[in-house]
Length: 155
Image (tube, rainbow, N blue to C red; front, side, top):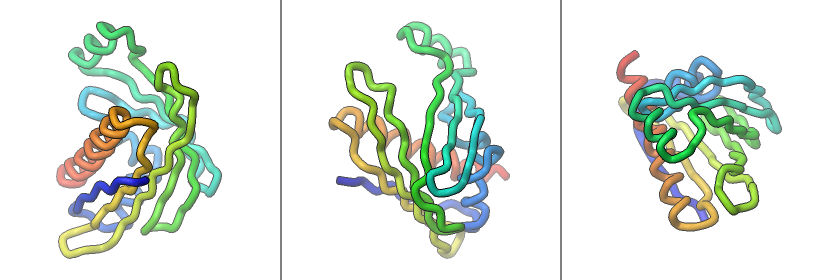
């Protein structure tokens, strides 16, 4: 079962694609407020890997992470399953951070289409292993799209 999240951003599909598929682009908008994303590997080919580290950098996020015994930095991995520039991108995220749950992969499909005023983004995400984690995922992905729209508006 999947869920869709949609946004329209004021940039061309080619620009959105660039922001979504380059280390510099990903680092510029991917992280939630108070965090930084550092891309350490990006192989934009089917089966290729994206590896990045997300680090808490704002004092309130650092304090929250420390208070809850969480590391300030976490490494994440994604594997590209489909690349159709500049309209469709799909990747499996490695979910290896859920306590007391075996690691698994989770599919996200991103579709970009040109519309008046910019690009319509439809992000289709598989539901996770339970409702709590699915809602966390949806909130996180919605935040990513909000960050992308804000970044595009600023540049």
